[in-house]
Image 1 (cartoon, helix red, strand yellow):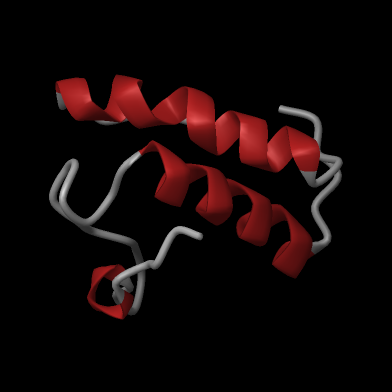
Image 2 (spheres, rainbow, N blue to C red):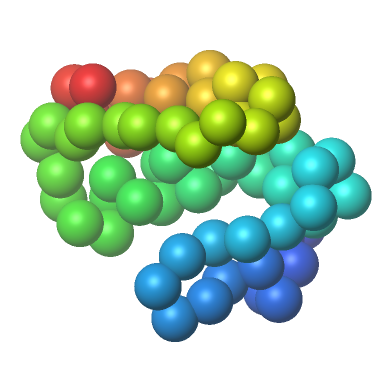
Length: 71
């Protein structure tokens, strides 16, 4: 089971070093939890310019989709 460092959660965002604190399994769980907690049916996603963003995006999207959300 993936253990998420609670220190990555901030008041308005989630920040963590890749891959020590924020990796693909963590991104998957975050995507799933985001959709389930909001009961979202559809979400829009954007990225910043860091190369790591593209590395964790597919996992986040899979988590959101597995929770029943349309991207």
